[in-house]
Amino acid sequence: QVQLVESGGGLVQAGGSLRLSCAASGRTFSSPVMGWFRQAPGKEREFVAGILWSTYYANSVKGRFTISRDNAKNTVYLQMNSLKPEDTAVYYCAVGFRFGSTLVGDFGSWGQGTQVTVSS
Image (cartoon, helix red, strand yellow):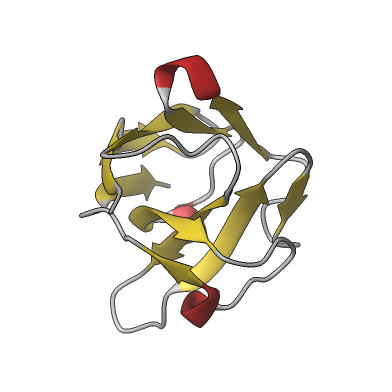
């Protein structure tokens, strides 16, 4: 079983940047898919970005967000630039079972989430 802990959230003005981190423990994750999701109040959890040996993104963040991983540190990152108020949400990382999937059901071992708030 893998445990995931997200960090790096906070309050930022529109146009600003944040970098989220997701630290894994319990077992290495050099092989599996890793993903970032987000959930805004009153909305369903939605896919943001995924990575294995390549990356894929939701259209809403493409060109602004970058997912990366450091296998030596067992950590996945989400660099978020040009943030918008609509990016406000709790951000979660998770282990994926199928590269290319954007479905919540294809991911597991969810972290506790980190709050990102973008002010206008």
